[in-house]
Length: 264
Image 1 (cartoon, rainbow, N blue to C red):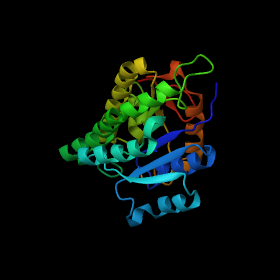
Image 2: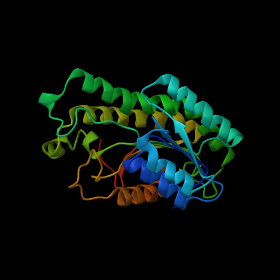
Image 3: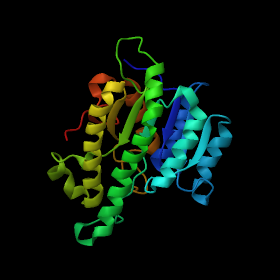
């Protein structure tokens, strides 16, 4: 059953690409009671100009927040800001979108060093772990306030974490996808993110908090390249439609932007 997304929504990695379009479409599609907390490392910097334009375009709907997911103090400060804004209403939806691909394309294994692996893990796994853990009290508040009208305890409208993952994280699909792009640090860190998704889904289900992974598809971004078949708009539109339909049965799974399950 599809439900409209609304409430308090936090998105990481929003200054460009998929994150930027997530903020834009959420601002377009959600109601007046909704508020989007758009997080990026340098909200006042030149790379956040498009994001700042969205704030002007949707007055009172978007709050920019400084957040470096690789820095624990930055995560603490960002969550404190969000907590002060949302108050007793809590946080309805956390979208962990910020990620890095190291080294840069084509990211061959032969060109990959230890630092590439460590930085990828720090941003792609430890970052979502930290912010999800620190946002848990806010997610719990939202889950307690909103009861389900259709008997389904979990939804992205009530309280949920969405971890943006990738088809390349699938161990089963690796022989099929590896020739397309090696990207070993990205693949392995996102596979670890999938396990985090499973662990969070098991841990947080007692609070009726939904946790799922989403693959945005092969998208025309800095990471995806110009020959990718999907635009960011197509990808984000699909992912938001999937988020709107998620329920208990989807918690702990990885799905693509069309709602198809991807094997681990």
